[in-house]
Length: 91
Image (cartoon, rainbow, N blue to C red; front, side, top):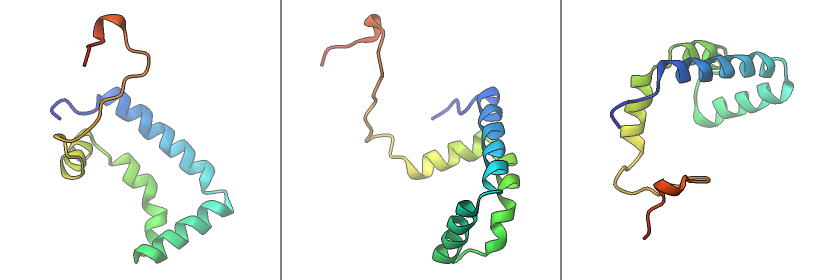
């Protein structure tokens, strides 16, 4: 993984996540799930209020580092939805 996420794509995703968070913060179900998750994982409940900052601070490098840590690139399946004829390769 060398190129990472483009700045435009990253900003688009961050904006979507922040908008979703703004809506979620008004929902009881969000708070119930977030508090349960914090308790279950042993995290302080105050981290719930820090999620917007976490999204804003997300960078392409952070995503690349996480991918390198958690994804085994020697073992994966590539799936293409509706591939172009010229990109099809026989097995």
